[in-house]
Length: 283
Image (cartoon, rainbow, N blue to C red):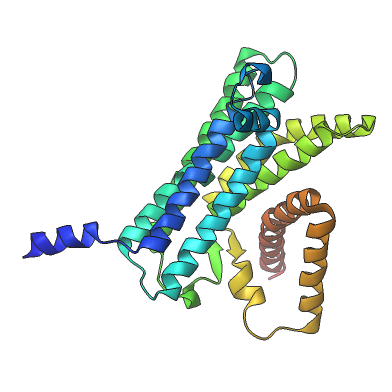
């Protein structure tokens, strides 16, 4: 009876949440596929859709990561709306996140640095850059494993995260790539220099976000903490201004907004520790 019940449990899954989770994984896989199109000349590609993606490979790959984030947010909402959260869905969600927010951002950053970075990179530096990407992916896997072990069901337990969430880390890397690509294709000469700066900042950013995923820094759940329930008029104005900035210049708003989300809790943690040390020194 137990074996039959176990088999029936595995065979029967909640369709819409699982479909959204698989959409997350497909977007992550698609991001890596599109980012890998960049060495192929567009004239040699017969399919028009593939040719279009290859012409804007890094931009399309970054947008696919953000689309994966949308699916990741959607699957949890669908499961809670149906009032059915299962261990199967949780494990499937983590496996999808490992692809979309672990492997895909690291591969995208490596591809951008390889093809639009310095013309000559010593082999030792090249291997070090690759190691940073592998380190980021490993940190994402450890972050997801830690979340699975310590996760508690219910919205009341999800007002903050211990360590940078993997979608936040992936969004930061993808946002930097979007900004770099927009500057790279700009007609202004200064934009080309800023694009080069963004390329050089990619490896340190990948390393920093990887370390923050396994850190003890607390990161807020923006929706649950700041947007749910009754809030002040000031917060409403701030959210409205952010939405308008997304309409006016969504690429730079996303890139700068994700950087702020990553850096502010880190700086706040350092500030609190510094104050604590000063108080202990005075006492």
